[in-house]
Image (cartoon, rainbow, N blue to C red; front, side):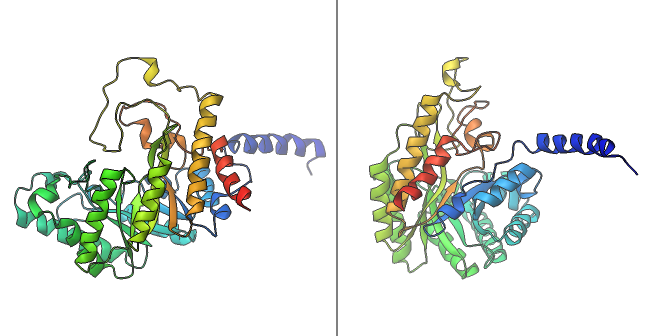
Length: 373
């Protein structure tokens, strides 16, 4: 029989080790999904590693904080159909399993996007071949997940900043009606799935007008469109609240559900607006372009918190029109803004830091609901 002192010698180090390995986990506290449960869904975008549950700390936070999930990348055509006619559904199916297991809603992103296309698509030069890819991809993917996900971003980022149609490969070879046709195909393949148009800067007046015209064109063709996603890639200290509110009202007036789909608030300097991943910013070796490598000062934390607070006050004001708010990433370390438009920078645009700990912005967001009540 082991003595009491022997047991302490064995057990105490084990407890200390367990404490050290779990100190990054979010302590029990407020939950975004529970706080806004009667208002709108609260979502996040998952990486491949998170879908495969390779990060246990991230997994705990995801399940505690969110009730709707979007794949950050793996449901785009580059990953789902890497070779012509050969589909790879392994990770997408794992996302479905993850959502089912954790009783979470799922959103597909995206069926048609001019970026992150398989290489062979870029080599297509004739309408017939692109039509074949376009039709087969939408029909196959949308049908596979019909009834398993809440909705699809059917078409992503089809507009220029001035509201005109982007001259993508789809526009050039299939014509200006390709967006309507994409929704028609998705409607046929996925009758039990909501269908959305998703874009950045469509709260801005000119681009908003283009989005409204595009949506009306789909509706006038008697094709179903259920909602619009305002991506919400905004910059600290420059949140266009008036434009956002006007957009919520205008899109809702079209009979659409409104969603904030890729929310983050950028802190680093940039010489252009928008979220076109083809754009890059040339940066000299100047610390001023990457000032927060070691963390963000209190004044910047406060600005980020105030911006998120203002956004969520607005979202709550229009909770009868907004059905979902999705953050584009689980924590700061995952954010795409660390690698774009300049690779290797250290950005801090989300509610949870690189240690998965809630930032002041998190508590400001929670406080918007508490103050309402």
